[in-house]
Picture 1: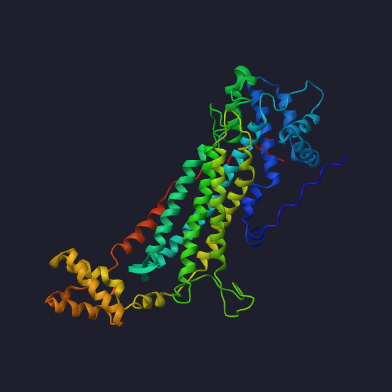
Picture 2 (picture 1 turned 90 degrees about the horizontal axis):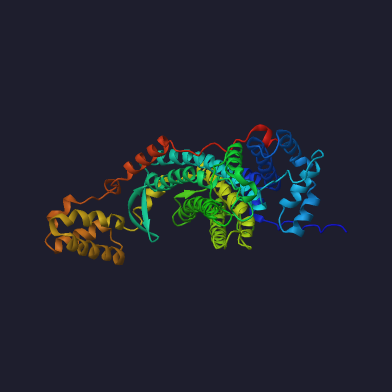
Length: 469
């Protein structure tokens, strides 16, 4: 009887339009199989070092546990029957061994030990790749912050103009986030890149007195961290990986959402990179849609939903999951690819971002000077008190809205009516005079980014004979 043919993967329009090739490669079928095979090879080598197997047996397993020896059709047919892939994988490796006692492959381990150890390898390599993307993105963003440290624009709160700021200061808040994200990845790597070798029920009883030595040796060979505590059902490290992916994507989306807003026809301050027909409409020839920003925002929405699924895996009971673990199988690769894609697309966005500084400055005057209301209130607060100053400026702002007269004039009228016209000379009248710490924010944030020493550890570096295909 022929094994059932697995259905084709669902078509993903998002992946066709943009998908980070590095993360895709780290979580493809070959990568998963190679990570499991590497775990089996390292287990055999560590057992030889501890005297559980002979070195000749470990060498034979090393040579047999290679991707080119695996019959995938048979593997997945067996996996569909068993529910998991490792039993079939172990049997295929065993068939490649020279005559000898059975049970030398996978001795003392359980399926989840191998799959979790392989996953740890994938996640740590994924974090290293994400860190490289953050480093590239941060350098581009830092250049933009410096370039526009003095480019005056309106800070917006609740969607409305609030006070003057600079575009550099606005971007600096994003740069600070990526600085922290980089630190988070460095701190998370040791918690995520952890060996699993606890056996069927978490006691490692099958390995007897050699359990600790074999586990630490296997961890060393794979470049992972050792732990004496099983994590078959303690999935916080996996959830942290997913959360980091989602957080990175959401930060990219914050920039993307601002770009969508600032590129609106009525604002027209910031625009995506342009090339012929980029963002074109099928029916409106004039359109240049912010397609990269839209893609990033969509990725963030997807990542948030996927991350919530990982919380269900935290509910696994007793010593092994009963279905909760399966949630990770689909969700984790998608989260990694989503994060890598969002970072890659954001780099493209930042490199080609077009800024209209004149429009930014002109928009500051579009509401009749109301953007300077706080400045006037703070200046008046000294001589008349904050509450009265607030009321005076509010009255003037109301007149500006109803009459269209500039705030400078309506405030002059209000102060004259209240016999406070002597205070007029002390008022700031230009946005450039009320930038507060905007320049310092841009400078300090870029300096922190450029002097940051925290970085991820190097990806796992197993011995060459363990990782070669």
